[in-house]
Image (cartoon, rainbow, N blue to C red; front, side):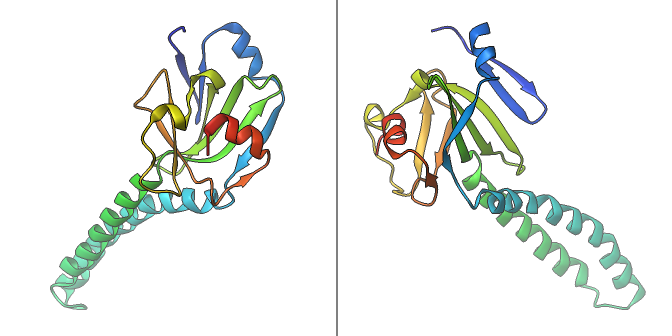
Length: 183
């Protein structure tokens, strides 16, 4: 199999190998999996950005109010501790939801999948994956410790992993889904 070329197009990531696959990007796509709560996950991942901005903007204000005597002198320390601990908590929680798949589409020829997932910053990213590049659960050997998370791994890049919440998602075609991803 040829080495996959990756090009970044805005917030969408396309993975292609041949010009024929470029034409597959313009074919009809059918949804086979959707996660209704993916927008909440994306909003949660973006929340850390707002937390950091609020903490950074409010620290000088808390310092100035403390120097003017309007609040206690340790208000800046309390404000910073709450802001930074909240930011750390949100960041760690974002690592758990990074690469969480919200939608899976399949083309008409059923040889390409389009995975739409949430990145660390809460943006939707789409990537094209060949069906033959999927590593099924029975070939991985080890089952997931967390039964509600199904890892999606690729043969071409075993470090790239996607997370699938198959119990909480809507599966439009269960037979096709099981054929692609296993149980």
